[in-house]
Image (cartoon, helix red, strand yellow):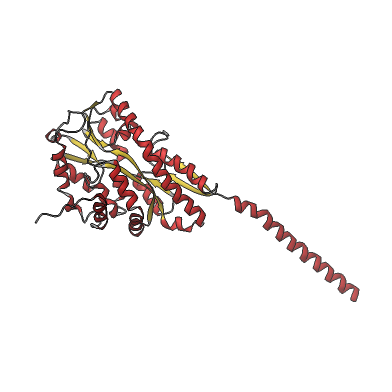
Length: 351
């Protein structure tokens, strides 16, 4: 009986040892797999695959720096050309965790984060340097506002220059020349209000329908930077360029804050650093691209008319509407900080 008991005990010991060894072996086999698994970041935007386009250039630069700064722990996958939907849809998909990043014009983001609305105020920036000074000066406070209002933050702020007016009907060299023209604008109340202040007929049209609207003469013109006009080949459907400076094309590249905070600290810090370094690099890139874009448009047959002779009047009328939209932009808290940085007084409502 003793021998049988001993044999049984030895068999149990061997069996248990084999099980434990097997479990230990599985853990060792799984460890390298877990350690090398990359965090996939889906990055979407609404423009094409041309690497010289600011949207795509920014995405590619961020991919390069993000993968470098995180030591290869992330895999940034870019989905250009609106493959995953419009700019507004991209923002909503970031909010919902469907994608991790998207870039869009700031005027398309204000419906989600109203405090971004100050960017839409006409003539708020008189130069690129003023815009950079403001963005760098309120980067963190602005993200705090965005997080509170939309659950997102901007990792990158990029720009495409000042928006200019193009049209297919007649030269616009002074304010009264705008009368009678139908100008496509985004579905943004401040931009619509600005053109109404100029006694022009603004027509809200979604971005993906804009080229067709110009081609079919549903609208006579539109307003966008030279870089956008060139990449969209608007020289095929437009004739004249008027170089107003009422608004810079500025865009955030947004991520969901909850997702960002769920990442390992070293990865999160790497992405934030990659975002800021991408923004700085894009500033140098865009200025050369803008000159090349204007050259492409004029070679394509467009006539460049320069700055209006009476731009001071454009500015006066446009800035007079500011107080009408202070509620629209979520109040004046952010605007007050901006004006302080710029050293200017904020327009007050008329009595």
